[in-house]
Length: 224
Image 1 (cartoon, rainbow, N blue to C red):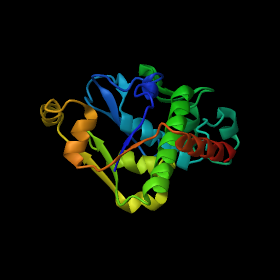
Image 2 (image 1 turned 180 degrees about the vertical axis):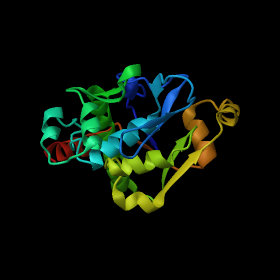
Image 3 (image 1 turned 30 degrees about the vertical axis):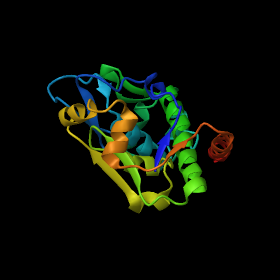
Image 4 (image 1 turned 45 degrees about the vertical axis):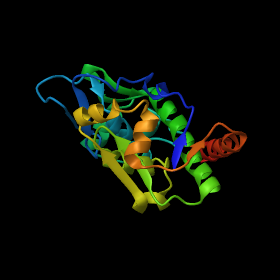
């Protein structure tokens, strides 16, 4: 089962740099440290998986609301936590961003979390729509040029994908060179995915039923 959607492909990248020569490739579970592609050079961007993982960590720690709004820095001062770790974590917050490395301007602004909120609602609604049209999917597939297992886990934490699908999620990735060779034998991204994953019917999300499901999902998350 494939799904064709009209969501703009670039909306997520308007407020954060996710393509660079030396991206941050991993964030520590305590949000204190990170790894980058080349340890000897300063970071210049944030990988997509790190964006999702950071949001998921903040969300699970109660530092990002269900509407994906960052916690107010001053509210963290009196939350009862103690120790140097907590002080350093507070220092990573501003009124509008979470700082991964402020010295190199590697930050995730609130606007990027707002984009993730839109994407969360869209994916959540798309899965609900697929269930309504075709029943519960046997498999939920994430396909990328790069390893995406951690990305899939983050999407579950962020409630983009319902937890009941955790056991049926499958992730696939390819070496970029091989991907490029294979891709250019096809006329479009969709035809490549169809030939590679052997998908069946496509589902267009451009109808009133999906719009209604999306609005309901958005309202649900706004209430939380």
